[in-house]
Image (cartoon, rainbow, N blue to C red; front, top):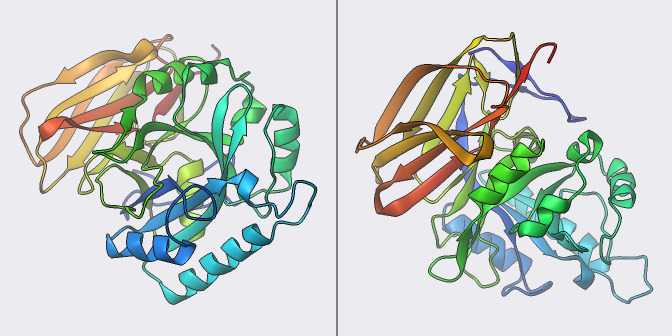
Length: 341
């Protein structure tokens, strides 16, 4: 598999698929800055003790302002200072700043790794995009998507900023919900999005549960994590031991693949979990339809190759892994574009 140069990121990085590091973390959680429990440092130390590799702290933006009329955000500045200090002391863990904002009527969004912060409700995506242009190393993620997110007006330019969507949210045995149907619907509408899973913690339970986001990187640092998420080299898992990726025609998970009309698609799927056996593999495309189903596997490791015909209707492919005890993993897609179509 060749090295891939990524698009749609100002900080372009080369990714080497022959040197993959799987890192496990939480892309959406809260502290006592807003509606969560525990200080920033207590949250990070708790997650690190649970052997997480990264956490993105996303407290609600309305709590960052000291007053309704202030343009200064001392709590935001203090958050970034605390994360910087924690990262300097811990070279095996990465803490990333962000905040959660409400959009009307489309629901909640995370703004990840911005230089600054804003308060208030998002009512106009044009204004949000202008703000994002001055925060070039950040991206937007769609949180616990309800049906209203399908009414977000699609545009390729807006899609440059909205890069991921939660396909799982919550902290079992408390409330936990899967959103794969919403994910597939957004892909059908033309969105180029990666799959993430968020514990959305509001208690001191960071990493107590197995539902996590896995990012595929070559090294553990903030820029690699942000680049991996923006470029969709990530998947949602309900097992913290699952290693998983796929490729089509040597294009890696998250890529946009340009093919000739009627060109065949050569899939390669890798999945490994030392604790939870893999029971089923599904290849899913347009409309959430399963185009290939492998059942009764009951193996801890698989390497599977197959060839499928291309279809003008099937513009994306996602892999779903089902493990023992009904654990699910959902990949980010590979997107197919046929030349001159």
